[in-house]
Image (cartoon, rainbow, N blue to C red; front, top):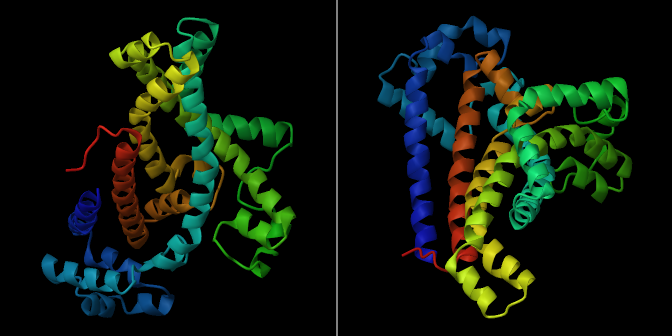
Amino acid sequence: MLNFILRRLIQAPLVMLVLSVLVIGLTQLLTPEQRAAPYIRSDQQAARLEQIIEERGLRDPFPVQYANWFGSTIRGDLGFSKASGKDVSATIAERLPNTIELSLVTVIPIVLLAVWLGTVSALHKDRFIDQLVRVLVVLGYSLPTFVLGILLLAVFYAYLGWLPGAGQLDILNQFSVGSLRRYTGLLSLDAMLNGRWDIAWDVLRHMFLPAVTLVIVLSASLLKVMRNSMLEVLTSDYVRTARAKGLAERTVNNKHARRNALLPIVTLSGSLIIGLLAGSVITETIFAYPGIGQWFVQSALQLDIAGVLGFTLLSALIVVVMNLIVDILYGVIDPRVRFD
């Protein structure tokens, strides 16, 4: 397995390199003036646009431009994001923990709910609970994220007033965040470590509706796959053999059936986590949640090239790392998988 991990780690930079060439190549469709935008941070710099174009070599051949961009990226200079008003690297450092926090609150309930309900549904095939689960799956597939998000906001924020609407904190708590000592970058956890339970509770209340939206929409596909996988495993020879040996039904279902049915869930969960960490674009936009996804939308709308490039490279890195983790988990869950 160590050799496999090393091979994948060697492949990761190559994947990032190829992707960066493609992305930077696409920017050549823009004019030099448009490509100079990421380096302009003030009106004074805008006045010397031509000088910036010459300094950055934006009229040079593509290989030269790519080499200049790559050198700047290696030094940590990803450009200036107009959408956030900060450097791209600083924006990612500020917003990525927020997206990670929302992802952690979301992905654990999604996986646990899908595995549990999918197993129960398969074990009670065609009974009432199975029919109910299938209805829930159809509803999850049918409800667009933006429709469900707006509906939850209308009911629990506008009508009932039980939960906050947009953002990550109430206005009064926003002034207190600066005094918190940051340990992890996750605001709710840092607030707890500072003894500010009021801020932690406020953060969790603001995350509740976005998390519920994502759980309802994203758990449908996982639930369906888990049910179908479990049904297939329950009819396999080794499960029938385990029953013939007189093993308890719980042991057969949990140890022999469910464990093998989890392989497709591992793959799908990896894709799910990739999507969440790369930014739940629609959900973060609807709830004005200050994560990576909302920043990407703002960057795209404002033709913020540096922001779009930064988001793209971050997403690619997350995909490479998560695929490696998923492949390793394959071997942990199923000993039959080998990495030779």
